[in-house]
Length: 446
Image 1 (cartoon, rainbow, N blue to C red):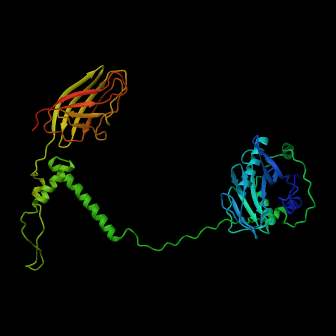
Image 2: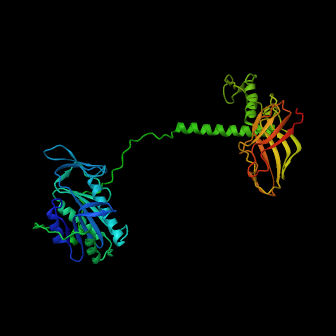
Image 3: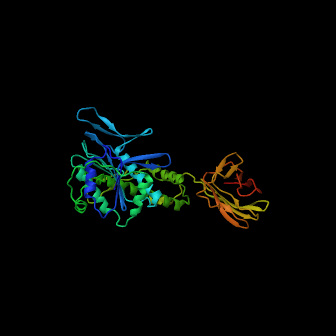
């Protein structure tokens, strides 16, 4: 059952406990100070490994004395009773492994060995332990990498209870045969261990220890909810009133925009702002008669700051607002089977809109994107860029298709312009056309 070379790393009490209390109905082999191959050129030594058909246990013993600090990552530090603090680590190349990493990598190396030799799979149950029989922690260490940290005078009872508990929780179906355990010994080329006289130990039986096992390092208890001092709610009554006032003002402004736009036929924001100033601010200097408040003394009167007559809401603003001009035209661009027709030109106070029709009689799918590709240039040199979000023009025109749409240029046309030119800077999808240019003469405007 025991194979390898016993040295001072593994306490004899632990070997005596395994030999005396391990149940006979669970076949197992024990590897002591054995090298586990890792690849073709490397190997890793494990202090103690207990392999059963249901799972395996790897134990790393550290015989240091004193108080130790065990961070989750990095080397540990121990302070002997009569010495300076020193680090506990295993040097592997240029990297220093903590005892927890050393135990977990020994467990993983043994699992990988079993998976390669016996195809037991990566999910073979395994557990690792770090045992410090003669040391005490400064602070309860945190477990990581599925490694239990056991320490103190009761290490023997705690380690036995942990192994019994995990072994009872392993799968009830064997993943290795008893013959495979013998083959492990042959592959690793280890000889039966020559054990010295082992001291007697007293431990509970396997079944009793599995039922009453408690880990040395308990799980951290859930923290109590943090008590936050009561603070005034940010959504105060004054804030609510201010927000509602802003919402009502926004709704009234939108209603005013709609009202003025429907009355004058102009829905541009700049024109509405100008009209609002002319209607309201222009009447501040007007004389308003005093209004007597009913059910009050005859001498108490209120004089409002200004008053807007209702009849002025539908009147024309003193500032002339340019109206929309339309020009029905029929200009055709036709080249190598592709035809583009401008059917209508619409000039507004702050925009230009073109109505287009296109016919693709070529075998290619022609792309005429609007973004950074469709422009207008007047005879004065001013450039107008089309807005792709307000335009309604297809991105591609397949062979044999007839499409129509609009191009929207959000800029006012210069009053002295007499001609504009439509440009599609690049035509995509075909070598028949490189660019499209179409001159549009303007009628005399008012």
